[in-house]
Image (cartoon, rainbow, N blue to C red; front, side):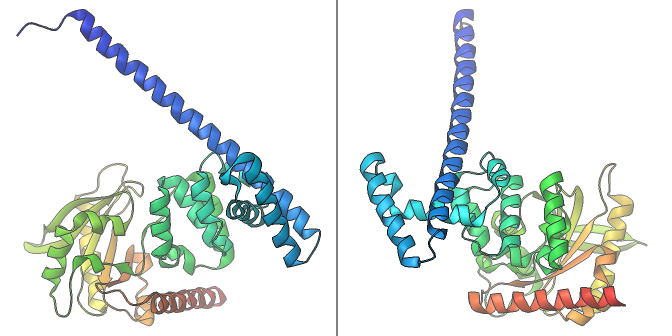
Amino acid sequence: MKPMPKEKNTTGFLINEIKLLIEESRQQVAATVNATLTMLYWNVGKKIKEEILGDKRAEYGKQVVQSLAQQLQMEYGNGWNEKQLRHCLRFAETIQDNSIVSALRRQLSWTHIKTIIYIDDELKRAFYIEMCKIEKWSTRTLQERINSLLYERTAISKKPQEIIKQDLAMLAQTHQITPDLVFRDPYFLDFLGLKDTYSEKDLESAIVAELQRFITELGSDFSFLARQKRIMVDNKDYYIDLLFYHRRLRCLIVIDLKIGEFDAAHKGEMELYLGYLEKHEMVEGENSPIGLLLCTGKSPEHVELLQLQKANIKIADYFTILPSKAILLDKLHKAIYIAKNQLAQRENE
């Protein structure tokens, strides 16, 4: 085969370089347009808000929006319908600080913002904004995270409000992910297809078979390393169910699967695994390994008395069959209440 003429090689390289320049320019233009439109929508909402707040009658406000929409659509098209104006108004009512909007418009799309502004709780809204920025969620992923009650399932939601505010402010400044933002409770494993009676081996096999979906449920930055990793302590073999690595936390993650409720003996097993990994498997620059015990139930007092946090051990329930959203919310709200009470008691001691 004859070698390709040098001119053709040069042309191919040049085409790729030009295509790259064009794509980069398109992305910059799209980002600029998004930022400009987002600011426009906020300013429009602010103007409507000022007009409506000038007259307290709800019916008057409704008429203002309807009338504006009709006139704007005639001149600028259907993009300025009543629904769009209500999005603008909600945007201005929800985020009132110009500087926050100015920063937000450069980091999130208008579609992201439309989803976030309908979250009523200010701290929950801030959580999704920061996580969306750091992990670069698509709008679909953002909606899935909200629907799966991600905020309520993370440890940060179980802290006092002032601590949550401080943690989220620190997250916004440093973009550093902490374990409280990574680990969840409970985990939803309904995609495994396990029903009725199953063993720990069945659970483990199902997770490995659906590894990608399991990692999606765990969260971003998890990498699978091993199943049934063999370690030897004093000539005795032990086996770690699942071993992962978390890129942002820069540490090994041990996942131990249990059928039934958490037992005090589980802590000792996990401490052995973590101690071995810290001594024999850690490399320079890594943080100490973290253990995650997945159980089908746990006693809050057991968890508190065993002080699992000090041992770098997390514990969480998992569901292979999802209860209704109402039941889930009730469980999560109770867990948040218990956790905050325990924190308050420790502070008063």
